[in-house]
Image (cartoon, rainbow, N blue to C red; front, side, top):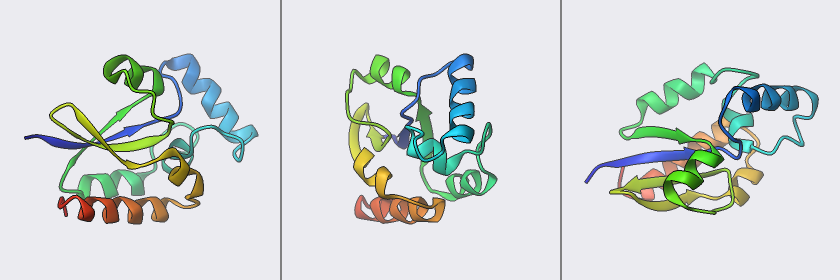
Length: 122
């Protein structure tokens, strides 16, 4: 049984989408549609504190964009969302509603630790 954390962005993959998202983060940060992106990324790169947090977890982290997630999993869960993925089964641990309530990266990190404890991972 191989478990991993799966973070799914509410944004599509691809270079042009990344540019569009970067511009939107700058021009309308409150209206930007992906709270996960907004908390964990600067304009173009992953925040170093977030990278360190993920590296310190006892579980692998994976990332998918909306279009990739739907193609691979055929899932239409509202995004962004975080799942525990085990043997191709997805267990939702952070919903889009919960992401909408998060205001800081520390808050996200705390919530992840709580959910991983609830699932016996830490």
